[in-house]
Length: 569
Image (cartoon, rainbow, N blue to C red; front, side):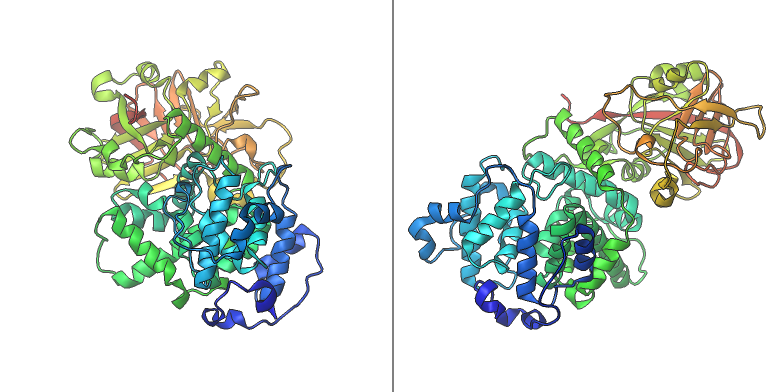
């Protein structure tokens, strides 16, 4: 019986259908790809004992540090204490940040055992400073362990994983906080409707997203979480992002149904939105089956693990530069956009806040800083460059004489244009996007984000880019894309990290003495002349956007905003 070998901590009366073992009783597989497929399909999901054996096999295969505490270490440390009845009144270490041990159908003694194991882990891993997911992972693995010592060993191996590029659990506040920023970036890109709902309802979007891991590791019912664990032990950290984004999508659908089309949602305290999401996730079993949740999670066409790791590192670097390496009170994003001090002749504070919700999370602690405006600095491209060089990223806002408002988020310093010499050269990264605010609000991101299949073939040489230029009609110039010096930290979504099968899908921004261009390939999303007076807009391959306003327009006002560190003294 599974109960005898791997279920001594389980309250089988709470397990429902999971208490009935059926299906295969053996897994003859050593190939990782085959394991991945079996995990996703739930091959061992109906047999508790088989699941425990598979987990043991997977965890044993995790590459670990040379000295990793095992079951014998636990027995030596605990000594006679292992024979005594553990107590759930033992306080958990501070690094779990108040996260309780989820019950997950464990007996009361099982929860107490989890407390004991976690405290022993704290002594063996003194470098852990922030790990709110540890109680959930310990509670889950206790389900599938013969005794406390085996559970201790399994969790130790997950904590001690040293496989290059593989991430299993965040163990510092810096890693955890950057993961929250990364989740915000992914939510912004892969579930824009849900992200828009959070922006509309929560006063502090970042505060809501700071709970993303707890939705998965803590709030999900056991029946759903154990299916996630099946895949997590095979595929790693990325599955947590997938499931959390799927949960956000289902939450938006749930909210839309409950609103019944009754106008726009009202903004409320962030803690209320967090509580609403938590309640939805805890009760998800009534509307979404475990396999349906995973199906939604795997239907997402996320960035590769390499790109997500790069984004995470970029966010970590941003936090380090701001001095945020230990837990502290988060600065509310609204404070960076104080309506009493923010002043633009093109957009209102509310419109700027909407734009702010689109930008990468690592700039959310920054406040807008006006760098250039034609009303003060005149209509001169030379002065435009003088005021904008040295700032990265920047936000370009344009109001036309017809009253339309459009613009672009530009990831790279305009000084980069000089790398191409006198030639008009494209530069920038896939974090660039274009948008329009009036007559209606819409954002257009890099086409590769929406269509990853465009990055499927091997790039064999530096691609030549082309851009339309004033007076050239349909003709185009050859625009070599300047290379960054070897050794520079590669920016997230740099085109060279992708195998692009079209030379026109990575033409982000360009400029010379007579024009600035945003977006290229079969047209330009924005073209502005040297007098910053006349412009054109059309569909371009890079952003796959429609014209952002009238195809030829006259500029009434142009502003460029930088991002000032709101935490700087």
